[in-house]
Length: 411
Ligand SMILES: [Zn+2]
Image (cartoon, rainbow, N blue to C red):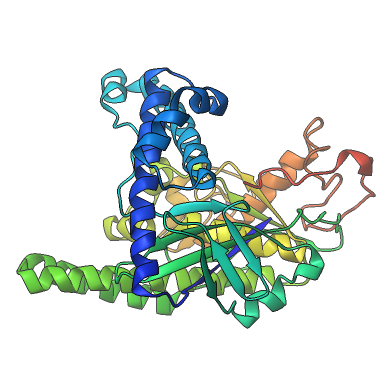
């Protein structure tokens, strides 16, 4: 489990220019390494060291060895990811795959530091640069040191150092702690969550989150944006840049608030979400309205998912994923799939006549498809709730507790 916190140390001009120079040489090292790996179709760190070390030392004479290693590690990871992406793309679009740009780093990059190149003693932070090691005093926000104390195993694992748009040097400290063992908690409910159109999140119990306000603010941003785009003057473009930042921060803040509320529920043991990768255009097509489709694709659900996952991990709630197909078309009572039963935000079943909010209906389907999947033999061992009733309460004791170790579906 990792958490990070950003601090802005006070540095002299000389120190800042040392960082600027370090970044240049760091980027050069990255680019040389990535190029070498791709040309030799290798992803081996040892190979890279053998072939490249002397050359890098010549080209970037003042870059500390520790940072050369960091840049090289990052390059190996980037090339691995690039290879995987290329292989996937090649299956569908071979020509596009050949045109894919190889990984490269600009001079305005963010550098990764590890324990060899950065140390924190008390509030004294020391890190290597081209010039010499910079020593500075930082203050870590109280909320962070209180929540993730060293006494509970939180250790500094490394950092990212870079500069923001205003030329301020930032240090993003990364702390790590062994993953907590999530206790099998069978007392709580299983709650399905639907990430929807009319509400950002709806639970299977019919609670809506982020409905009115979020929609109003988002609509205002959309309106202002389209007006500014029409104008197209230079100042309009500047304003567009500024509001895109505001809008992003608004979404992130809303996601924080919603995930916090959900993670703090004390009677829940599992949250079931729809798998984002299966939430493709098929699902979006179901939401017929064009503006609604736009609104749905505008919200950062992957961010919400990440925030919910890590907050739930802290509170011992598991997060599981299920296939998202037909969740909004199926009736949650009689399980008939009929897309005509859905009218806007109402779901009125044409077969059994049950009525409810369309998002609640979808959330119940998500919860139920998790429960049925968990009940299937073979998968039951992995997805703990064996013998759970549809209401989310256990009917019988889990058969074999030793088989139920890790929560599946967690990224
Ligand atoms: Zn029905």
